[in-house]
Length: 93
Image (cartoon, rainbow, N blue to C red; front, side, top):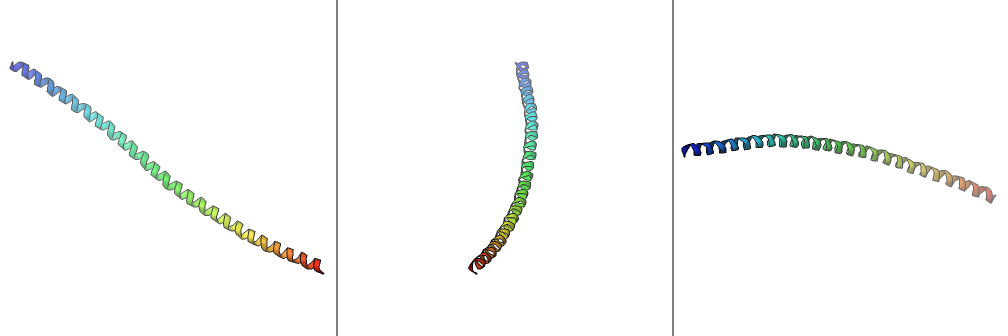
């Protein structure tokens, strides 16, 4: 009877050891996955910062170009207005 109980106890201890071993392996795998996920997140955050920087740089360029176009359009309007005024004067004389 004592021998049977010892055998049963030994069997359960071995099962627990196997369970601990599997849990340690699973923990290691999960730690690696968490590390990889953290690396992917860090890369995406860097990408986001870079994309925001690029977007702001492009926005500045577009605003500058639009401003230059507005200035050019204003100058063209002034030139056209002067030319139109001259042609009216010539027609009146």
